[in-house]
Image 1 (cartoon, rainbow, N blue to C red):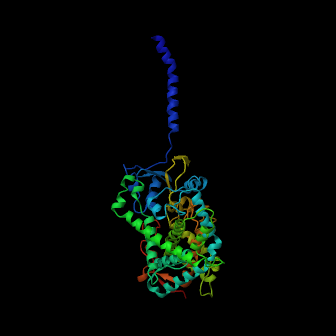
Image 2 (cartoon, rainbow, N blue to C red):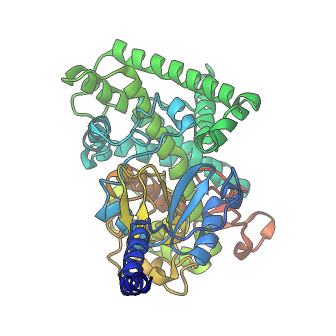
Image 3 (cartoon, rainbow, N blue to C red):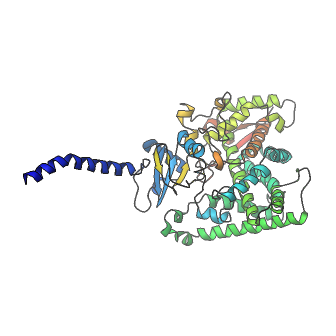
Length: 498
């Protein structure tokens, strides 16, 4: 008995050491998850999103960290709210995070995610994106549509001049961007012609964009998917998808009937280019691919472009010093000219800085489209499992005082005049169009439209508010949606410049 006790006593340190090592190994092997706010059963953190998710998520990140893990129903969602986290996801591990989660509404509206925006990462996506970058949105192709931009921005200016006392700039911007994209993508305007086809198409585009920003509870709580049948959402999606498909099929057939566009490329629209790609491609290209890519052009090229122009113009009107500086620059460059052209724009650094500052404060898509890692990985020391949705809060990053100083909330275009920070995804503290492989390929097109439109506006008009309201009191309230526009339209008194 004594011998047994002595043996036990002699082995006790080894037993304790073995227990310690076993526990340490188990703890070391446990995933180190990012910090998380408390969640509710079934819905997880969905109740914390609020009407404006980019703002709600920013508030949560201030308490839990710039990299945090939430649960939307049963789906883990990583939220990145700093440039360091964004750089890790969209730069250092870009290829690993380039997949898209499958979202039911987007999938049904984009022909099974056959577009560039929602297609899963792989050979198909690379092939379609290459067509967009090299054929549709290259610098050469964008320049070939210069005449379209100059004509449609002039039409917009004339319409504003026709009702200067109560000009609705929000509506003017939306009409102008829609007409530009229609002419560039489809070969003609569909803005409400006498046959009614334009009105119908405008309604289809509006419905498409609204539905793409609609939350589907079934994506996150699968057993509640039946709700979309009861509330009519499934029927709406099916109806809009059908109308869009039938309209684009007619457009494609009209292009096939008329044959190829002009040899110099000036009369060639996106449908022409895609049909040529379809004819010449070694791999089969279905009509639905053409339709999905054209849909991307409207989703990104109309609402987002008009929204960005609306916010920048509103910020300028609200800040008399800034708009006076811009008007001085534009009117000096355009002195003696009836109208500004794109050559003039290249000599306007403050104009370009104002556009950047507007995009910094009001990213058209404040939460970038979600990504998904293709395998388990680590981000800033935290474990992130395959299948986790990843959302990057561009709105929070673009306004982070750590990058932009104590005046980060202020509209100050001067901050870009002597700065190398650009918006094309190289500087991760400023990502209005995203970055990496999944960054927006249409940046050059968007900037060309907005810079010319804004230059023509301030060249032609001085601005005030209806009823003699002070410009400093201009309502800047946001409206909810995938593209966060102004809640109230931008109504102004547009006085011809003296």
